[in-house]
Amino acid sequence: MDLKTSVYNAAADGDLDQLKKYLDGKTSSEIEDIICSLTNGATPLVIACRNGHFDVAHYLIMDCHAVVDQVGAVTFDGETIQGAPALWCAAAAGNLKLVKLLVSQGAKVNCTTESNSTPLRAACFDGHFDIVTYLIQHGADIEIANKHGHTSLMIACYQSHYLIVKYLLDCGADVNKRTVKGSTALHDCAESGSLLILKMLMNRNAKFEADLCGTTPLLSAAISGNAVVVEYFIQYFNCSKLDKINALELLGATDIDMRRNMFAGLKCWRRAMNMRYEDPRSLLLKPDSETPFSEYIQSTEVKTLAQLEELRSDPDELRIQALLVRERILGPTHPHTVNFLRLRGAVYANSGSFEKCIKLWTYALDVQQRSSDPVSPLTQSILLSFVELFSCMMPNAQGRERYMPIVPFCYVLDIFERSLQVLEKAMDISRRQQECSDVGGHFHRTLSIVMHMAELLCQLLPGLSEVEVLRLKQAVYRFVHLNPRGKNNCTPLHLACSKSPCMAVRHTVCRFPSQAVTELLLEVGESPNSVDFDGNTALHLIASIKPCPMNLFKTLLSRGAHLDLSNIHRMTPLHLIQNAPISDLYPLQYINLQCLCARAVRSYNVPYEGMVHESLERFLDLH
Image 1: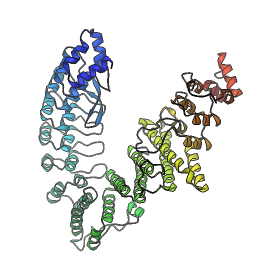
Image 2: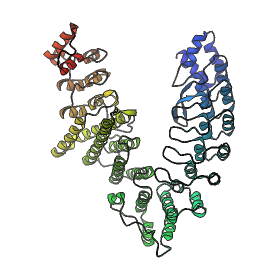
Image 3: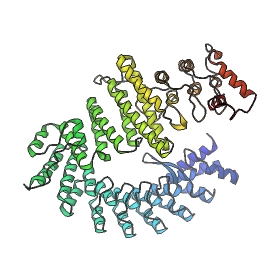
Image 4: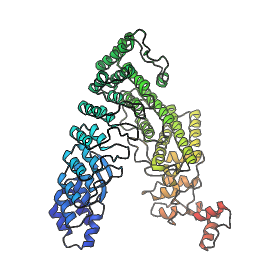
């Protein structure tokens, strides 16, 4: 273990004596280098503050002159916080003594993490009232919001910290400030279920307004199942009768599909239905038009008390009704609508009803494709769920239960083709906006998930009919000719020949590099010599794997991959594979006259840029 790691571990453990021993006798420049270095993403001071070790932090600051505003990556409650300053860590850890030390030594009170979270917000999250008051008294800005627009007041409301909420309001916090999605502190309070805080906000002139999704605080309470808050709004707040009915119906749906309380759900629905029909002239009848989801599953909402009573003996239909209620009130694109579609699908999958699961998830994917960024995290999550589900239903799935059928080819192909639509739409948007198609890595992750889908299709290949094989090749041909490029300008062939194309894909039977996917890509026209930004071809990637998969290496060669192409480091696949068992590989068999001529031109260092055709110039550059 090196010295920097030893110092980091001593700081993390709060072992001051050991820390002093490590640094004893070191020059000031050596100490500065050690305490400014990152180990596991953090400096010794940052990790000491995160773990609440005052003595260690005091020694690092006062004796070693550590910079008090150093930042690092730390973990709280299983979540990694990037760019966290030492003061943020101390506030989140609830150590007032450390907070005072850092502030007294010049730490910036309004320093932020990469997500723009302040030390004040960190203290509000876990309810450290003494730290909240101290930071505000020393200049903390109560209105700084994180990247999502959530303020300290909002997080205190969400965490139900009454005293902190009151103190923030007394200090002038904006009770009606909105997040990026248009929600307010009243939404957070309604979601958390604290009636005392909600009343206080209302008394401080909190506005009862909908967010950008059309969700009011009343509906937020219903979505979260906070019946007490829902009842308060119904009884004491001047909202419309339709708002009250919708809230009761949504609360009933939450009881049924989240809390599994059929009795409570039916009670809410009866009450809502009685409110609808208590006046014979009521204009609040349920709409006759079917929602997109009702058309998709060929089921409609019940409209009478008699129909509602019939559902008591059919729990599955009750849950479908809950999904229909959510879609009608919140809309098909609302995050909660999509999330509960996926949740219900997962329940079906766990009980062996795979076709129902696939149907619900396919609808959720359709909704996402129509309503949001094509490579949004939610779209990726749905596609990933399909990969994991199909993996469990593959013939070679380890530990596959007997009740699990082998996934039909048509389902996997359908989702593969839909995922191509996602890629195509994302690439079209990138072209129109003249931006890289892999902004933030979202496109690359989606492309990697699609590669796993292609591998699953290849695993089904031996059992397919001629017609099905043709359909598969047509889909993969379309994939190749989209020419999608991921991180570092990698092609699908690069990913097929990579050891791990996407670390985010879990619980899958896919194995990479994949011989089957590589052969299929090459068969439908993928170029074996496409290069990434480092000048690597797929052959370079295969040659770099230890031990080298020789069958795949030879497959690429047989399909026209050049053995002597150089990457930006002037390394050829032949250089990279030198330590592999290649006794039966004859390099000259795969080096043609064009390659030899190109190497001869390059060996003479004769300038050729602008003097030959562009395609020939690129060919010479590669050699």
